[in-house]
Every structure is written in C-alpha cells, then in structure tokens.
Length: 319
Image: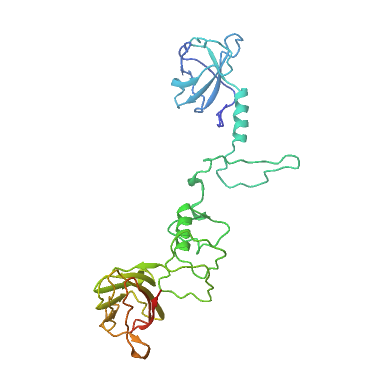
C-alpha cells in the first residue's frame, strides 16, 4: 500500500446516492462520513459476490469522491453498483498495511522523545538519499555562507556546502601558521618577496632567461636570476628591472660573442629599476673588457645589495 494516514470513523454506514458504473471512478455518497480522503469504504459489504473495497483517494466532496476501485483484485471487471447500495466505512486490511508502510518508511518531523529500542529488537533507521529536506533542519543548527566555520566551533551545528567552500577557499588562499608535511608541488609557487627561513635546498635549477642582444640591453629579474645572450651589438647601456629593493640578489649573465666577435659592453651606464645611470663597481675599479674572439664565452655576475649600484664579477675567456 502507501505510507499514508488513512481516515476512519466508527460505525459509519450510508448508501450510494447514484449508480457507480463498472469502470467509474467517482462515487456519490448519500451522507457525509465526517472525514475527507484518504479513506477506505466497502461497497455492498453483505454481498459476497459483489462486495468491493475502494479507496477514496482524493478530494473533500463525499458526493463526488474520486475512488480507486477493487483494491482486493477480487473482480476481473469492476462491478456496477446501483443507487441505494449499502456503503460501509469498515476496518480493512489496507489500514494495517498503511500503518506498516509508515513504520518502515518512518519520517521524524518533530522532536523525538522516549526510546527507539527494546531489549529484544533494535530499531534501525535508514535515511535514503533525498529523504532529508533542507527545510527539515532547524535554521539555528546551520552555519550558512554569510557566517564562518572558524567562528562557529560547534559539535552540534551543520555547515552548508557554501560555508564549507568559503572556509576551504580562505584556508587554501592564505596558509598562515601552518605546518606542511611532505608536499609535491604540481605548479609554480610565487613567494611574493617574502622571507623563507631555515630552508635546505637540493636538486634545484635556476631559470635561464633568454636575453635579446641590443645596444640597450634589457634584463628583467622577474624572468629569472640567470640568463644567456649572444652579442650581435656593442652594448652601450644595461637596464635592470625588478631588482629586489631589499636584501642581497644576483644576476649571472653568460655572454657569447657572435660569429663576428669583438663586441663590447659598457658598464658606465647601468640603470636599476628605472633609476639614473651608474657605473658598475669592479675589483680595483678595473672595469670590464670582454673576450673578443668569435664564439668566446664570458660569465658576468652582477651583485645587488638592495637596488643600488651593482658589483660586477667577471670570469672571462671560457674555452
């Protein structure tokens, strides 16, 4: 049957006010039973061959009650009941089947008191998917999107998915005072010029930035702290950008002469982060003279303390 509460009254009996034809689904009762649908009726209860159990399935008008016919499947074809046929609101097996179905599909819609167990029988309740509706949960027991999980440290409240998402997004966006175990990175990490202390580095590489040869040689430390250039020009100016404004930083440049060779690099017009031209400081003020042979390789390391005038260390004529 159905997990429903069917209506019943004691000692109600009436007659049909109009014929209920075979296949008909509208029953006209002569008297109001005092209850609305759903309710079970027995038509012609004292006639073994014509007795029929029906369900008043919907509506509130006893004179036009929509019924489900022949609940006992007793008749191959619904019988015809003449006007004046007795109709009784009796206790039938379907009442008990409805009760059993309601117990098996129990829905707790209010506060539960008492004990749902006995010494011999445990009560197991299975909540099927979709059986608990959002509206069934007391709003005071929810942590919603406009609130935060952090400020609702409770073992008796349920966070909504929106509240959980906000919390996770916030926690993963900024890791503050967190201890990380073994971590394997799957993407780039930006330090945003923050301090990393007590770190041990191994098996690492630095980005080799590809520097384009030009009279005004541009080097952007945002692309890496090492780079390579094949000189096809005499360099008159060096322009460094994105040099950290505090701390000690370096840029190592591998310089290769092109097939022509004898390319030069002036270090008396060096600008840092858009500042004015300065002369890079060299050991003993000796300046810089590159190797001249075609294909010759020199390694230059510029050292910055803050974004001030750089120190230049050169290792020349690698072969």
